[in-house]
Length: 142
Image (cartoon, rainbow, N blue to C red; front, side, top):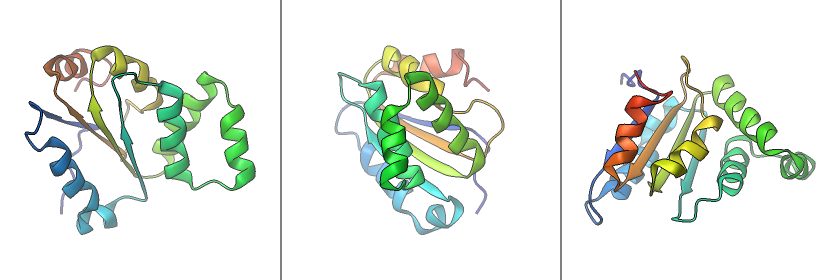
């Protein structure tokens, strides 16, 4: 199975179109599971809380001890983004960002995700076409 070299994949469409269902199928597919070392799924609400999303993803990707988890909770916003970015550069990760509502939410979240040549992938579901347009015109553009 050849995995696409794109860093990010977007599923865009109306409510109840099946974006999340398709993302779940990708996330749980056996070939995908064999290809990646770390997995994280984050539901992004309308009131996107960047720190909570980043912490949740980092915990899922690293399976930290209690002491390491305490260190994560003490990190500054910048340290947390840097650490999450670093983890995704060091190992192949698949991160699903489910239901991003706005370009503003994407702009807040994106600093924690690598933009260079990495084997980690990000899959985003959104009902907002502007999020897809923002992706193409900003730092993740191809």
